[in-house]
Amino acid sequence: MEQKKYSKSTEAVWAGEDSPYFKGAATTPIVNSVAFAYTDLDEWYDVSVGKSEGFIYSRNTNPTVAALEEKIRVLENAEAATAFATGMAAISNTLFTFLKPGKRVVSVKDTYGGTSKLFLDFFPAYHVEIKLCETGNHDELELEIDKGCDLVYLETPTNPTLKIIDIKRIAAAAKKVGAVVVVDNTFATPINQNPLELGADLVLHSATKYLCGHSDAMGGLLAGKKDLVQQVFHFREINGASLQADPAYMIARGMKTLELRISRQNESALKIARYLKSHSKVSDVFYPGLETHTGHEIAKSQMRGFGGMLSFALDGGYDLVEKFLPALKLVHLAASLGSVSTLAGPPRTTSHVELTTEQRALLGIPESLVRYSVGIENVDDLLSDLEQGLDRL
Ligand SMILES: *Cc1c(COP(=O)(O)O)cnc(C)c1O
View (cartoon, rainbow, N blue to C red):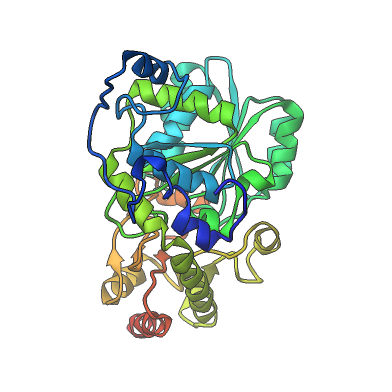
């Protein structure tokens, strides 16, 4: 896959699947071996010290995991990639690799719940300064970056109100002060957005979501500049948050249909957002594909599709959510996202459960908000399901 550039749908199927290690296999096998044996001690030594390619011990690298790493490397157009046990392992390993006492991070208030917990509950003890800006406020982000910082951490679109950050603009500000730019690309996936091409140094994913796509395996992936990825890889192989061969296979298998799923989900989410926007019982719809969304123009310039995530506020209080959600038939009321089946839940119960009503209001999250992760079902079936649910209000 080195020489010729293929389209994303082709890369999703073929990248990483041509390892000489598995010559002739029609799919990447699951190698559950913990260690890899050598008959030649010199060869073993050379692989151990990184002089030649090979596998030693699966906490470091494993053939099935390496195939998955190659798939995301190609899809994100990166120099290197490495895998983790979960998305949070990818995030925490990346942050702990680059942050030491005295370092300063600029990020936003709307990062994934676990990420903001790292920033607010854990890093202060390590004397790392964290500045969280208003998510849509690019001027504030630039101002804080200009003051000097070591790492800029972004997520776009964000959870749950799908705010959009201009990656190119913020990466340019970060370059001026020499900060490493990390983007959580979980919501967009490499089908809709490639942060490295917009100036980011590292891109990471909760592979648990769209990449796997079937709610049946957890994993995290990091891709980007080789020297940076290698530093994080080294920390991960030592602290041990490594991905196992079984979930690596599940994620790589899921990724083969990523482009198909994302195309469908992009299309369905836009139709659903437009339908909800015109409904009298819905007071607000958050979807970057809507012309009325505050981040629409930026999203149009940096995304190839607007994604399968949307949220909407029912015209009233939380009591409406209590009536509406249980009435839906084609949905799992669950915390995750990005699966073949539609998932939904109130941020009040899921991602933002630990905040008070007032804190949620400050983040622009109304109590009547519903987060809706569009699956690959027939969109007319989803629309009529939503309709019968709204009819009960
Ligand atoms: C779920 C999620 C994570 C964390 O991933 P896990 O695999 O659950 O650890 C990080 N970022 C975003 C945007 C997510 O949705």
